[in-house]
Every structure is written in C-alpha cells, then in structure tokens.
Image (cartoon, rainbow, N blue to C red):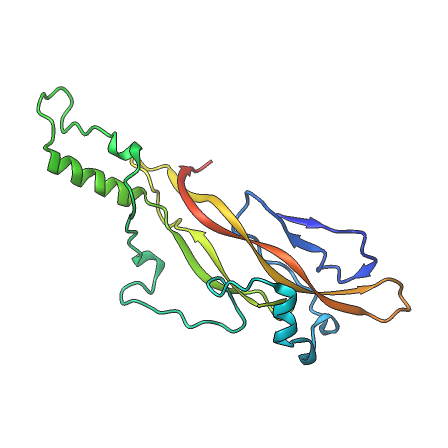
Length: 208
C-alpha cells in the first residue's frame, strides 16, 4: 500500500508514492517518472555523507551493489525448494491425534505418530524466501533484501490454505527527492529517509 503526499509543491509526480505499513505484502513495484532530470548525479553519491544521513546500515538487508548469492545444487528453481521446519514443533501439530482407521482400537505407535507429525510440520511450514531487489538509482542503498512467502502449493491437508505474510519490519533507505515550488524556480533535490516494509514471517492461512 502507498500513501500520496500532496503538499510538497510541484515535484516528481511518481515520487509522492511512499511505501507505508500495509497488510498487502509484498509491495507492488514502484513506478518511476522516466525523465532523467529527476535522477541523482554522480556527485550526489558521496557514500560517507549518505551513510551519515541514513544512520543504521544493516548489511544483511541493504547493499550498495548487487550481492552474489550462493546457489546450492538442486535449489536453483523455486519448484525444487523443500522446506525444512526448525525450532520447536507447534503445539497444534503436537496435539494432532492420528487414527489409522476410524473405529479401530489400535493407535499408531509413538514412533509412527512422531514421523507423521514431523511430515505434517514440514508440509505446513511457511519459510520466508529472501531475494535482492533493485530499487533503482533514486534509492540508496539501491538493493534491498526482501522476503516473500512460498506460494507454489497449498500448505494444509486437505488442501486449501496457503502461506501468507504474518509479520513485517521496516528498513530505512534514502530516496532522491526533487521539488520545484514554482514553475520558474530551479529544481531542488536532496536525499531523504523513507521506510521500506519487508516481510519477516509467513504463516499457513486461509486463502480467502
């Protein structure tokens, strides 16, 4: 979701779209005015000054140049991704009782029950898949590591539920802003901090 700011005079029409906290994640791509007059020049990329304006630089999620991501054999395609649940098994899954056949007195062994729970846990596990996104030269740092939820298949048995964003955080980046108060005035530009939302957790939820 984006908010439109309308009290900044005559400025980049597309710039006035800023990301704000939203339930609709990941964000749609921000449309930019293609006119190069709104682009920062080489002299505007003084990294010392930009880091001073930005403050905290979290290199896990921000980068000036495109990082080289380590590819693992067999995991190049999202379809080949096999989620591996970790941490403590959710109490909802620990509480599941498996009846092999309705009406039968015999219950599955503890070992079999544990295996079924682990399978269900892995199947319903919703990891956050991270990838680097290029925001363009009007942002600094221009590369942000954003999260998405696995959506190629259902995460429930029976099918119907899907992985959806459950929580997010906000990263601070710098946005190149150009303002012209009056038509005859010279264009004034500067870097300003903006908040960029990033998915941090995904959860198996109803599709509607």
